[in-house]
Image (cartoon, rainbow, N blue to C red; front, side, top):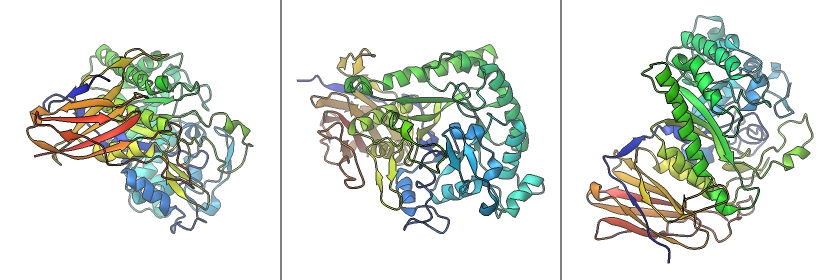
Length: 503
C-alpha cells in the first residue's frame, strides 16, 4: 500500500499572483498552424475573412489570454510589410526557416482581427535576424501610433482607423541558435536588442518588451548568454524568455514524467542569473520571465525530414499527443505556477496543428488532443494567487532524476470567486496514491468537483475518427473529512483538478 501524500497550504503563505498571460500560446507561420489551421477560406466553417469558426470555438474554450506571433524561427527572416495592404499585391517569398513558400495571405492586421475573434491579445515578435531597430520602430508606429505619421496613416489607409495598441513585444527569437537566420553572439544580440528597445519605447512608452534568453537549457552558452544580454539591456526590457521542450524518445515513461524537475531547475537558474545582474547594476527593478515556448515535442521530428521543400503549408511538426504526454504537460503547468512570482508570461507552443492542443483536417474536422485538457483546466481554474505547497510524497529515482515525488501538486486561491483549485499529477504508473490536502486556514469549505484525466493505455491518442479516446471525467473521489481536510485517491498515471468552494 502506498504511503499517503499530503499537501498543506495556508492562505497567508503565497508564492505570487498569477498573471493570466502565463496561459498564453503561440502561432507561427509554420506548417499548418496558419494555413489549414486558423485560416482556411474554403472550409465549410470559414467566416467572411477565411478563419475557421470551428477552430475559433476550440481556442475560445481554452480562454487563451495572449498569443505570440508570427514566430518563432520564421520571424528572423520576415518582412512585416509583406503582410499588410491589399492581399492581391502581397509577394510570395521563399521562407528559409522551414523551407516553404509563404504566400502572405494572412499578415499583421488579419492576425489582430483573429485575436479579437478569439478573445485574446497579441504578443508580437520583431525581426532581429535580418532586420533591426529601423523596421521595429516602423512596425510599432504602424501598430500603435494614432495618426498623422507615415506608418500610422498607412495603417488607416489599409482600413484600420484605430491603433491596435499591442502592448507586449518580443525582441527577436532564439538569437543564440545557429539554425536561426541572422544568429548572433550575446554581445551582438544584446546591443541590437537594446537599441531596438529604445526606439520602440520612444514611439510608445507603454509597451512591455521581452529579450531573448537561451534557446534551450542545453545550449552551450547557457546561462552566460542570459547574464551578458541582461547586462546590455537591463534598463530597457521587462522580461527574459525561456524555451524548452521535452520528449520520450527512449520510451522511458518514469523518466519522461520526471522531466518537469528539469524545468524547475531551468526557471530557478534564469531567476538567479537575472537577480545577479540586478545586484551588479544596483537596480531596484526585477526582470521577470516569459516562458514563451514550452511543450512536449518529439513525435514528429523524423517524419518532417520527408517533406519536399518549397510547398505552401505542408504538414510540419504535427505531433499526435498521448495520454502520458498530457501528464507531462500537467507537470509543466504546475512548474510554471510554482514560480508565478517571477514567471509572468508563458506560451504553450503552439496552438493549432503544429505541436498543438488542437488538430484539424484540411476541409474536415477539428478536435482536441490529449494535452488540450490540462492546459484548459489550468487556464480556466488556475487564476488567482498561488499558495506555497508544502508537499510530502513518496519518491522514486529515474534515469536522469533523483527523488522524484510520485505526487506533484499546487494550489491556487481565487479570492474573487471564493475558490481554491488543486492541480495534481500522480506519476505512479502502477497504483493509485492516497492524497490529503490540508486547507484548515480557510475555515469551512466543500468540494465542487474532482476532474480526472486517466487512461489504461499511456499511448492512447485522440483522432478525427475517435476524438474522445483521451478525455477527462468528473467522477473523482475527493471528499471533505471531519478533520477539515480533503481526502482522495489519485488514480495511477492521472491528472487531477480538485475544485473547492470556500464558505
